[in-house]
Image (cartoon, rainbow, N blue to C red):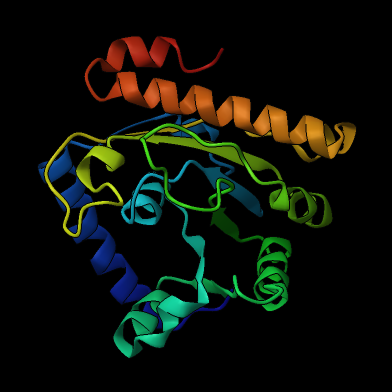
Length: 222
């Protein structure tokens, strides 16, 4: 997607400060970055622990990510400006959400990477909840790989019951993508089970990564 020079510069500056903060305040560690597609579109599917999650996944990827967020967040003028700057796609959860899904599909076909959270909402206990099947249609129609991502520590740093974040340690793990050919060979139910398995594995490795990076690297690919 074409982006203006000011938009690219502001994004770069924000990324530098966010990366500095994630390392100094949260000792963020990342594994599996070699699994990111170098070119082309990708549907990035991660577990959802906190408001930090889009930023954390974005920092773990050298390429620019697009994000899905509920449309009501765009009601605040300043927050809307920031989210548009960060390539956020509004999704109307109260309606059909068709406009947001069409824009997501458009960006995937244009070679962009789009991050979604298939659980549908932030975790209540820090664990991975059952995934919702909405991603299946996007992946099939766009013919892009699905990249599983697992986060841990973001829930402890900013649980949904807390109005403000606190310090902690965070791990982010990128798993082996599910290729378009693999997606085509699976039914929706099988794809749902396989993606959930990979996200749960990445989450488990991310939990170890926070305290024992060496052991986490060995466990990355099951």
